[in-house]
Length: 343
Image (cartoon, rainbow, N blue to C red; front, side, top):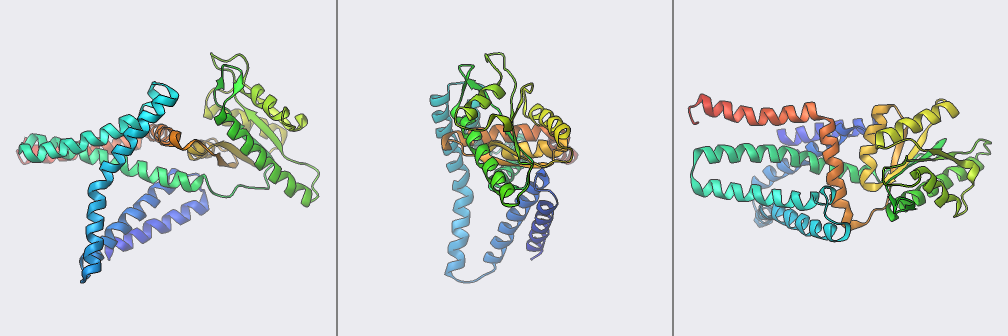
């Protein structure tokens, strides 16, 4: 029961965190803790419950624990092969393949350590598994909350819609991924306009297209985005081009400067791809941008690789905490083993 109480506390902290600011990474951590502790508490109660149904549920949980990592690894490897075939071989497209192979490697290491009977190998395996478990817990928590966050309702009372850019095809043309963001941005803009007209307000929203010029691009992403929208009937007078940014941080910082100058104290809705929404929200919170993020649809085959890249960026952005915890996970078992004379 104590475990279930801890799960309840973690979920309460999660709800409080979402109410206070849904863009905080701590929300993902508390949600993950609540779900993990809740599952553990549920398993404990099942173990104490007599009857065939309880035994079958426990068996199902054990099978899930055993087969889950194997199935996940297999899926990631197959997805990685699909992504590299469609997108080409480069570091960004290899993430899901490498993640799947890493899971297989840790499983193989556990099996080898169990059969070898080597104390040193067992210790190394335990440390590796603990570090891998910590990173996996954060990843699963991030994925679950990122999925939830990207589907939260957007503010239809905002003053600006900010569409974040991405690379251009051939250096001049909007890619399908960027087109999806622009279409989503236009939908959000239309909803805000409808509310503004219903309220009979004179000042309608403005749409900011944000993106500078990359080294392989012949015009700025903002210009390509603006042309895409105006060619499809969007009113040019309601568009603002932010054409200096190269990164998400710059997208948001430069767009914030535009909004602060045009309408101080304004609110915005930020539009990006669904896999990028939560990380963009974390950055927006850090920069003091008064707005939430909504995600545009992304091709299903590309989502695992993209979300792994997003998680890696968030993990590194909290490097002091995360690398510190990983260092403790490594150091404490080694120190204990040295103290006991095991190594």
